[in-house]
Each structure stands twice: as structure tokens, then as C-alpha cells.
Image 1 (cartoon, one colour):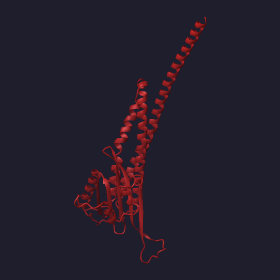
Image 2 (tube, rainbow, N blue to C red; image 1 turned 120 degrees about the vertical axis):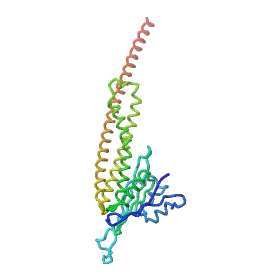
Image 3 (cartoon, rainbow, N blue to C red; image 1 turned 60 degrees about the horizontal axis):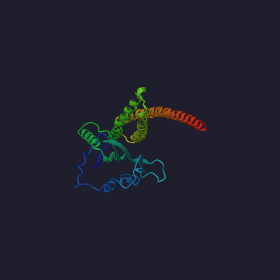
Length: 301
């Protein structure tokens, strides 16, 4: 069953304290999801992302909404307004138990009041437990709690890591074809190899796009962190994750090109097989023609 929870804590302020964990959601105390969205004041542009009737292509990508306020002394047409809060949305694709889970995250950072609210929808138990464990640790710590960007880092790090098994799987399949001996390129394997290699190329293409999307989300979070005053530790973590994920993306591009080389090789072998078959047919046709001419000459004689 999908998990969703809301937690509020203070970022950046050394004297801030976490408000603790939300109570478990049960049938008795569950709040309708639309009511939660209404109570939190989710931007109208973001609301469709959480509604089940919204097409899945609509609720993709990341978005940020900046809210500005002006002091009493500032004229309405003045340009020196102050950014009071930022509100954002991310939709992640999490490979969870061999299925693609759509994880939606909404957050709002109050830059004036130094508080943050996060809402996670369709969150995996692993991510939820990791966030709750981190909050418990920070709540019991006498040191500075830092900012809530650790929530974003836990999520995007888990999302990126969830695709590792898929990447390793296509890598192993590709290596199996690259390590074939010449004697193993048999005609009876051509049809199977053609189908498997094309499926492999398609899977790599999908993985490449998924990893590219994760890179976009990491860049989005890094840009968001620059607006939130907090612990630079999580900025360093996001930067490191971006570098690692970028290398995965480069390797997938390499896998895709190497798979195309294998496809071309098998296509070349299939063409050679067809050429041999056509040559045999031509030779047989020629023999039949010669024999027919001989039979015609014998009948005339």
C-alpha cells in the first residue's frame, strides 16, 4: 500500500529543533489527501501532480515557485522585494522490486520563519525509514540540525541507486556477446541474437533517459539548495552524487554504442548467410536450367 507522510522541521537555524515524527496513518485517523494539499497551501499549479486522474505524462519533471514579499515602506512597484519562501515539486522514477514506482515530493521552505514542510506521496518504506531514522538522530543531537535538504538527498540517492541492478544486468548481457568466440556465431543463433540485442538496445535507451532525468533532478536540487540557508554538507553530497550519476550516463552511452556494434556484426553475418543461400539457389537454378535444356535437346533428337 502506498505510503505518504508529512513532517515539519526547521532548517539552518542552530537553535531550531525538529518537531518529531508524524503519527502513523491509519484508517481511523487518515486525512483525505485533497484536504492535506489544501491545508498545506500547495500551489494550484502543483495540485494536479497528486491527483490520480491526472495523466502520468503531466506529473513529470521538477518545478520551483518563488514567493516574494515587500516591507511596509516598499512601494508596490519597487524592485527590491524579498524572497520569503520557495515551493517546489519533484516526480521521481524509483525502480522498486522490479517495478517503476512514481514517487512525488512537494516541499516548502519558509526563508523568513526558518521552517520547512515536506510531503512525500507513494514513498517506499526504505526511504521513509531512512528519513525517520535521520530525523530521530538529529532530534536527539545537541548539535546543529542543519537544513532539511538531507531529505532530498536521501530520496534522490536512493532513486539513483535503485537503477544500478538494471545497469549491471545490461552490462553483463553485453559482455556475454562481446566475449563470444568465432565458433559461437552460428546460423542457428542469428534470430535469437537479433531479438535479444534489439531488446538490450531498447533497455539501454530507456535507462539512459532515466539517468538523464535523475541528473536533471540533482541539478534542480543543487540550484534549490543555493536558495536555502543551511548546512553545505548536503550540497557536497549532491555534487558528489551528480558526478557519480554522470559517469553512469556516460557508460550507458558507451553500452548503447557497443550494442549497436554487436547488432551490426550479427546483421553482417545474417547478410552473409543470406548471400550464401542466394548463391546456392542460383547454382541450383542454373543446374536445373542446364538439365532442362538437355532434356529439351533429347526430345528434339
